Image (cartoon, rainbow, N blue to C red; front, side, top):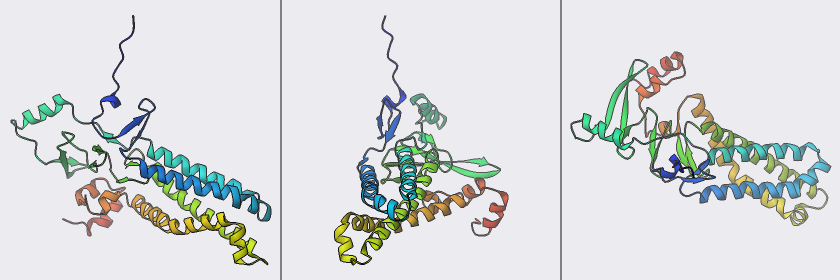
Length: 275
């Protein structure tokens, strides 16, 4: 007798995310920019390993390819982990739960916010009319993926996914490792051109290794934004904030107090965020 096939939760998922490998991997509904990110990183590093590493391994040190490979593997692993994993999606309320909530309000729609106590401080829980639930503090609804995400940071098109509680560490690792990788590859390309230009001139060096010039140009144009992003998220991580909170979309002093890292942090910001 054939066993009955069990319907998996991802098969009846109400959001817009796409699922792959029998629900083990997930992406945003439009992963095109993520594929562009992947192509830029892999293409630039392929030119680096094909043209700069053989030259620098002989002229500088054999450790150059090893360092580049380690940074590339770390960056790629963090990118894939961020892009293909659950960012912290909060399941929507079941039909019975939503009906019970409306019945408790005498048939009227639930209020837009409800106040609860967290660590002795009042915190407002906002009601999501799409997911039919009061979402937890610091959660927010992503309009692109159509899901509520726990500790929502932002929707990043470059990684093709939301960034939230469950994948923020891998996102931060990706941004920081990409910064080191971009600086390293740029330095290697410039060193290659500088050594090749000795005696022959810059024009001859560019003609002999146009791939190095292309790699240097791509890294130079992108490294500033990557370094700025890494610095910004280092600041957010050190102050226990999210991008969503820092830019002012969800700026609530009660949330800051209830989820501060320590009482010292609370006292330090009490003056600046007083009601």
